[in-house]
Length: 74
Image (cartoon, rainbow, N blue to C red):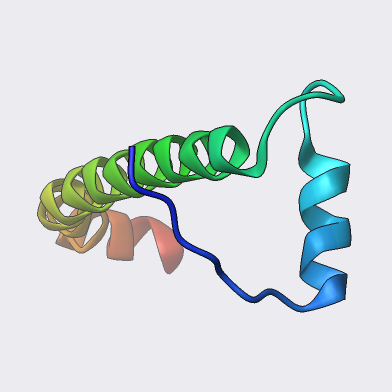
């Protein structure tokens, strides 16, 4: 495995230390885990946005109708 050196702010290193799941977890393992979680959340968010767009048209159809407006003014 090829390795590289990355310069990080000390505050970021402290944040990474706080995120470790166990004391001997390497930063490489931790960053890989963070990336997996980020990708999963991003994928989930895209799915939620997709569902929201689909639902918008139906909700507009249900809410924007004459019968409801008549009830509002009854």
